[in-house]
Length: 306
Image 1 (cartoon, one colour):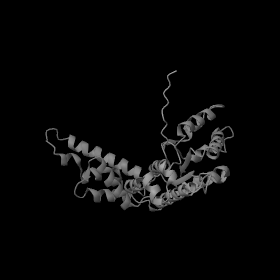
Image 2 (cartoon, helix red, strand yellow):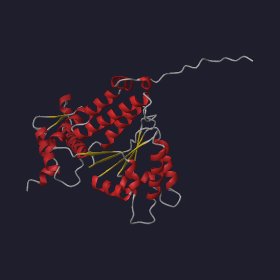
Image 3 (tube, one colour):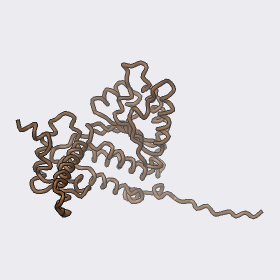
Image 4 (cartoon, helix red, strand yellow):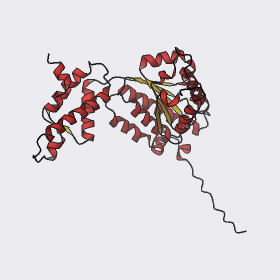
């Protein structure tokens, strides 16, 4: 019998022998995620500080583990509260990377869902739906947006409660391989936790995402335009500043999301303006500049003229 026995290479995880904070940061490359978070997101200072604190907790926990001081992973389920467009999903993606690099989850991917992805329409439909999503999310982070919609006490035939029960089990029993982040408006999340103490007790970290100020929204618009190779022409940035000051007072303002939508419409107006002159040869500068009229064409200015 001809048998080849290959020598197995046992790889030593450098994190498991790290002795200093610097060792862990170097081996896990966490600093790069934190600096990307710093560059990606304008403002949000309290959120960034909390993310750094959580990263610090995980690094120290890793050092404690290496000294045989802890057996269980700390509870890492989180709640992100704030209005739409304040960066909750982006921060959740970065959090997944940090958790992965420090060895708290195997894959570090993010699965983002809402009630409709978890709750079924009829008896026996919810459990398989919820379990399917949990299977996809294992090894990473499950981000449940507007999580309070899972709980509808006014309807006794609602299946959301079943999804909550399954989630609670997994959050408790498989927390070594899945981190759940619940997100939504602060007041509604507070009510949800009061009605679901089991959920409340499993969520260790609460991060509140503040609304952006107008100057921060302007910086966000600069970043968005830059990413698409556009820029503001003379006076256009001031016009957009005026637009934002009006827009933040309107209903349904969604922070960075509303900025993106407004810039998309300004680009449409710029395209129409350029399209009107069929025979003109446009320079790269013409094609990438938003002018004052492209901003001022917004209905918002017209409704404030009266």
